[in-house]
Image (cartoon, rainbow over all chains, first blue to last red; front, top):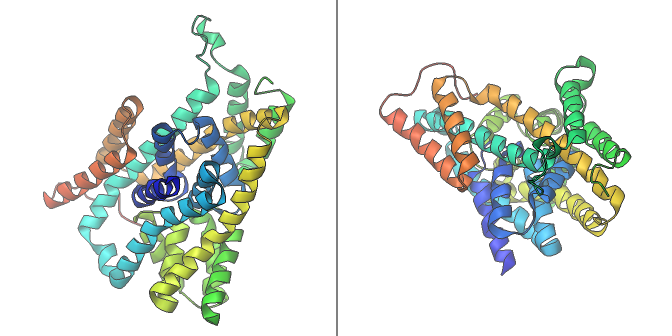
Length: 192
Length: 186
């Protein structure tokens, strides 16, 4: 039964996630809330693993969620659910390729869909950031103790290295993910 | 039969060599499909990518379906697509299994706490990159801001926002109110 539900959830994700890359993230975030199959912290780990391993991010994320939820059958079913709408839509479009690209309604629709997709990814990013940088489990503490300052410092350094330093900003994300993992161990980021 | 095997293996190879998907796989597709095999031309590849950007789903998967379909019809499309996702299935299943088993080790917890910070930065960078291609005039800026504000405070399914944005696009085009210039599709 959970396999059927997995297929359906990922079919919807595959059908509505537009633009590739992290476009599936808002849908998975919503899935975490709706089903309780995984937490937002686990979702952030999945992004890291999906970015550091071969294969398209969306497919990696689907496999990961499927595996976490229902083992290997779950991984297979979630991935098939994600790609099923693509296969159907592309096989239909392949028949009238050029007229699809030049259709003004298709064009206008996607002009409006792209900012929508970016906004949804931004909201998912903020959700992850909220749980990473803030700890509101003890609201009686003064506000500056809610903030995880170690995490803020690491984020600031990464931001500078990935956006403004010419020599380092072209490096593959896997470099930053591994380095952050080591910093996390070195400075005891989880506090354990 | 032999050709289907070949199709599957070549796309599995492309899947293994792609880190991150999307535009990262374009050079690999060019080498494997245009230079080495002449299965597609540069122009076709660019077209597939542009369509992959504005159709649902993962771009790598969409491109695989297109080329498989071109070579061997519907079954070819399906075989190529299964090929491109096969490496992900194997690699991620192994890794996810390992991570679930070692989730209680303190070093693993600390490492992922650090990695989560990095993920926030990576998502921020991805949004900045996408911003350039998506937000090009007042209309698209408004769509971005409205959805950002509403999705932050209301717990609605992302499907609703995608549908609403799509309906807005069709409506504006029907009324000839779509802003000219700027945001063109690829």
